[in-house]
Image (cartoon, rainbow, N blue to C red; front, side, top):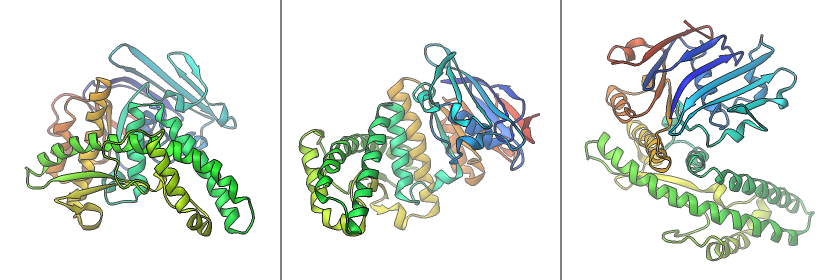
Length: 371
């Protein structure tokens, strides 16, 4: 998958950006707050995903602008395609989104058409940070392979919200406890399905990360990833999410009913699960050094890209937003060696990353414009 052209105007501070990209290496240089990450974010939104910076739709539009427009043309294994989205001030909900000229109701409907992997400095804390970051990483990785997975996540979150609302009411002394059965069954049904897909994906992810981590440490350390369920003691070889796993999930919810009512929320389920990273048998989160944690995070992100290639037959576009400046030369080189087959967009402040570059294109950004 290769981006041919990206144009953006009015998106945050971007003005009149219209660039053709190299099919391999692209570097966007500039000082901080010049718009480099805004451009990366605009590309990321074309994948149909939410902003990795948490930007709300109304904030797409620059302070002094009346509208924001982004156009991106890309080529996949079959054809060239074009994505456009535009937002007008005062009519954010009426966002215009098109794929090859066909209007889509939501930006999220682009999901699955264009695939990319974004790597930010915050991702370097993937193995050390909060569990919800790892859950989000796993969920996005699965959804890029199986777009319908998003429906299961949305349904689970909706049911969870309803169940938690009832639990809160019960904890305050009102509401009907018998109606919990309705939410328990729906939560168990969807949660079992999500558990199976997450566990299965983590096995694949582990196979890739082990190999990559072995390479970055020259075989001195071993990295293992484990899916840690708050419902199931063991998911190995278990796939019957409609019967066996459903019953076990439901039983666990029933066992925790009294605790859940007392606390006013659901204490176990896929929304509380985690992915544990271990180096030579020790938890990276608890005992890993900063270097080990960063190396583990690197391999997880790179493994994500390689899995997408294996599943979809083509590499995604790799977006590296000011990551290289956070790494030592060994890890910088490790990344560059493992993205050689992909189209890459790198943002950086320091031009030293350009000196050893062979081929590709360099863009300089200042005040939201590409000079």
